[in-house]
Image (cartoon, rainbow, N blue to C red):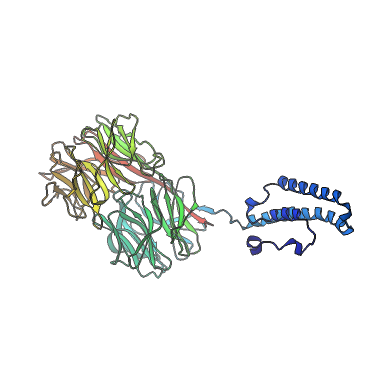
Length: 631
């Protein structure tokens, strides 16, 4: 087999003297290693043999004296040899086909409607533990055997599996809830796979993974507006003002691979590794969406699921030197969860949709105002008649997103340009957008005729969120300078340097948390407690009537109340809080009628008079597969 694949046949003259050069050429053409270099059909081969026969016949007729008895006996031999050449070509083509690996085999393990958050192999290689939210319920833990599709729930609290050690201890995320965008956090806990009560380890953990020995954990956790990778726990290897997802330790325990997202909550980004000394290396270019990562058993490649445009992720691999390749593609979105030591792969095939529901002014029923497959609401005009959103999926057709404006009466959406939508100006004539491609920068996009105008980047390295002030002459944004965590800045449109107004670690959310007079910004402080930050500087004032984690989204028209909700709650509960009295009222609960696969409602937008609202819902319907034969 090695000779067939790699070695050239010996010189024919050494085995059968007197073979004409023309026939040797034909036979060698049949034996080419590359199938594309061989004859592409029997007809082509017959044509060459016929031409060779004519040449041989002509030569023999011209030189009859040269045909000795032995030579005349060779003519039948040539015909036989040509036949052998044909058979050899067919045989070798078959042998070559036999060396092509068979197609992978997919075995479906789950069949219920809902979302699978994660799945892991147990040490025995035959049991799979996964966390799923079926039929609109909370995330629960289940286990199944590969040999049969029977699934049984584990007697554990609501949560998700993050990792299973070589000794059979699970790292769980209890009370896991989605925050901004694709970021989700919970309480890290440990529990043996054989059973018992989980032991809480750490709060606000996004990811965790056991090392090969089953002793140490790598964790990713939220610290203010930053995301921090620690391995082992307590030792910081990498920190970013964006966020880190799917951190996995290499089979040798010397590297941690992860997905590095520059914008907090947004799943675009690149694949990276960091060693125990904190040296980070980016392995891949930027992807418009990336979720899911696992190491190949050899430790020489990182497998991940991502897409350049839209959300239809395929399975890719990248080596530690940065060489990438496509492993598998399928209709819909693939999400890789785990790879066993034997090379078996756990992945989900997912149907993803982000849609927008709107109650227009004077309306009595919500209206679906999504444009394509991944519509994200970003701002609602003060009178509730205009919705600003962007498309981040296949329908938008751009890896840098596309900005749209649509009236809430259901009129067709108007495509304004590429970029991430941020905020609609108070007069409705301009849109504030964010260019995601390096170097990132804010820009002003006219709704009607006019030219796009960039806002000077100054010293800002990354932007997170941005919105207009009520006067339309300034913008408020969350961003970070190089080497620093995010904070809030005020930026004049004349290009002057932005001015920070909060300490590092204070972020910004969609909606419009600037007071009607432009003097205060309502957002979450370092302790996740809502507070009012003076734009001119000074100490913030806590809003005690809002519980920790409830984020302000808009002021009432008179500036006396705030609308707020807690991200991750399903359904989303919107409260109206009077600042002076502290009185809080449940104003609205919102949730699509069909809850299956809904895992997040964010953002929620409200008009100041409460006459209209809009929200984005994210839905994933997953099927878990065990795949053999992926290479």
